[in-house]
Length: 411
Ligand code: PGA
Ligand code: ZN
Image (cartoon, rainbow, N blue to C red; front, side):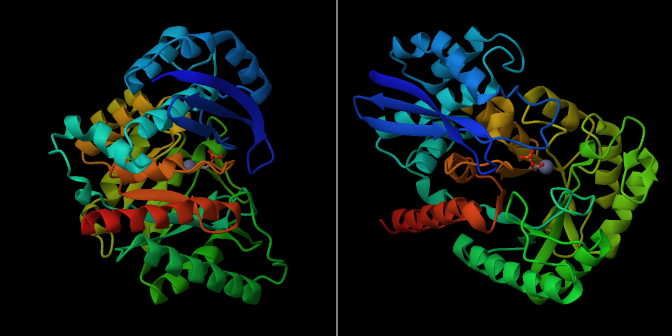
């Protein structure tokens, strides 16, 4: 692949925080890759440098990419790791690393004359021992959508989510979740006198209602629409080193464990993300054990207990979680780890060990739809997205991908 131009520019994430975009021109075409920005970032994520610093680093390292003629994604990502030998890209920034890594990935896709999701699938194929031309086996993940915002808003729990139990098609799930988003708005208007149609940074509704009333509203709409509930507790944000600090309570580890267990019993919750602080592999394991087993509507694995900050898309931490049986699901965020190769390895390892895989957006997003293609190409079980505002870019890309897959099956 001949590189004609490699550029960086400062753009802005949906949170109006500066981020970076990489432009790569090869002899086959032009691609652009931009990087999201987390707000409640985990301690174990790759370092995200301020955009201005990442641009300065780019000036120092871009010659390694301009001068080379790369043949594989592994070579690109190996080069990034060779330049920055730290375990978390603290020298060049995980955001710069992912910008370069994903721009090359998109450029390889053009070389291969494939759709991005198809190329992801194709690249992972040898490791999964699939036959060539098996693209018809591609399937769509189910959406997990942020409906009501918590501590991006009022409640202590960061996100109140809804997800389908099964799906006829992604487009169908998206239509249902969109309708339900408006039903929730009406319910909030009825119950919350101060509700003024406010939305948080992921375009989820903001309400002054407490978590119990929010969960009761979501239970009502979920039951009417064959949906189930999820929560992202983002518990590291509540943890002060000894206790979980809620507005009206302070909970020890065991009290938090009992509180979450109780919530899962009282409401039709099938998905619980980061219920404990990011270094507590043990209490995660106890909860997973408590909530595993057949639970109506949750498939064969009971409630999904999912690690986001716990793993930070880091293979070493995933192995620790697998060893301790900490969770039965994982969040995957490419910018937590910094390269496409590492993202693929993490996802494959999670799948190999029977964990549910959830590709996820960040609270500060761009219009880049890379995660949609990764989620489909890697065969993730779920994709976690917003359902309104600028978040709709990714929902709409999923609808396009689904249509393309259907066309491919017809050929
Ligand atoms: P973040 O929030 O992108 O700010 O990390 C999303 C999440 O915790 O899942
Ligand atoms: Zn999270």
